Image (tube, rainbow, N blue to C red; front, side, top):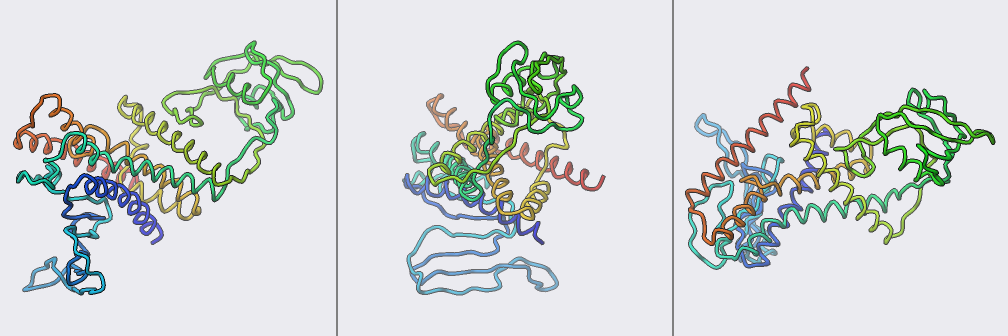
Length: 390
């Protein structure tokens, strides 16, 4: 049960923030919003604001004349909320996404009629349309920054207790261990370059993945030299997982540091930049074909990760939320029809051509995009099922 609840909360928050971005941006330029939905159809609960009050409609399966139908099973009106709104706010039965249905937009619903009214998206200029379509991505990046700032406030950060060049810990069966380096050894030079701090030493080591280098160090007052063959690891520290850096298998003692509010903001900004770099390099690896099938997944993998993170504690769960949020931002900005980036690409193409593409052409482009997205979803689902079963 915790896996299901964690998944719903994780996806619910991220999708809500994304769709809220579209909603607020649309309203800011005078575009009408017909429906704001969290979750996908069928609609489970509808909230409609009228002059009579807030109408709440609940839908579910009903057995009628021997057939199972999805229909309204309950309705009530809260008269105290009597400010009318043209937007119907909806909770979908399937917690797998959401959408904002704006007036005059050719979207996944394949609407093809535009009346030319002022509150339609099609009536707005290119910059206004790009603003509306990019607002969801912007909100997801803001959410990432907010969550990382919260993490910094909750758990603080860590720093090296003493940044001198002395080794505090050696990982068994790694290059330093195999070369005979010992705890207490202090680096003097690495591959001929003198090092005066731990950061300089690490920087030098990372330059030589899988290479044999000369390390000069001090051991109990005696200067020694060793030839060491380094290992390699993805550059996770900077987020550049698309490149390898040298690895020796050593570390320093870390101490916790409490962060002030201002320091938490700086931490949030730093970690958001790291997450964006991580996502950029990850997408690069995917497009280059350098990612195995075991490293990609669908909602099944996300649900499993959400459950494990929730069981580990609040901070791991928030960390996963931040990563998924920036992931959604990057995926949505890709120029694939059906995604926000696809809409933006069409807007830019029309601006360059100086005219609007025909509705027929745009529907064809949308259809191709939806086919690509659905095919990818099926592939990822099957990949997860195979991973679970075998």
